[in-house]
Image 1 (cartoon, rainbow, N blue to C red):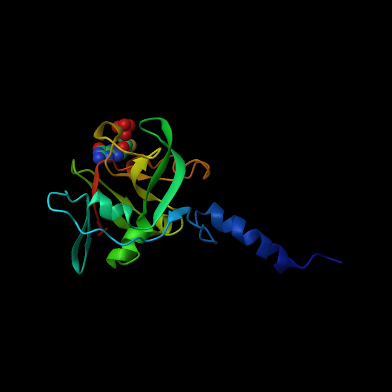
Image 2 (cartoon, rainbow, N blue to C red):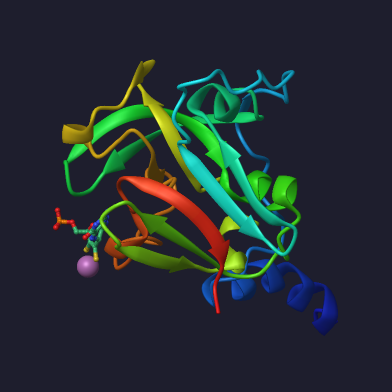
Length: 177
Ligand SMILES: Nc1nc2c(c(=O)[nH]1)N[C@H]1C(S)=C(S)[C@@H](COP(=O)(O)O)O[C@H]1N2
Ligand SMILES: [Mo]
């Protein structure tokens, strides 16, 4: 008896989808804690990150960012060629918290560099704005205090040609135009 065609196709579908860069099953993000009560910004605390939405700019001090749900995973920062356990806020969660549309975003740096990060990536992979590496705040020499980290250790060569997505000195997130 010939093998029925559809069941086989159904088995192949996830493979085909992932081959063309779509992840059929959104990954579970590696959270270390959920949302915590946000501390009020203390006078003198600098704004670390601004998320620009139609409602206006939403600012976060580092302490306020640390109160958002946190993801943590090991990654190799390609420009530093350094592997560390990075911790930060998933881009997806920042977008949702600010009420931005779940479309491509532009992450901006203090040196006026910026990169467009597609929704198809940050909604399915825990791309983060990291504020800690191996449990410590990140210095400017190590491209901090905030930088984009991509989960590049278990995703094959998915990010091999995405050097520009590793935005260092990140200070802003807005909808990409
Ligand atoms: N803040 C900031 N982040 C940045 C850049 C930059 O100029 N400024 N360049 C990006 C690009 S295009 C790439 S390829 C890598 C370059 O890192 P490298 O110059 O150390 O190779 O960092 C990315 N992150
Ligand atoms: Mo680049």
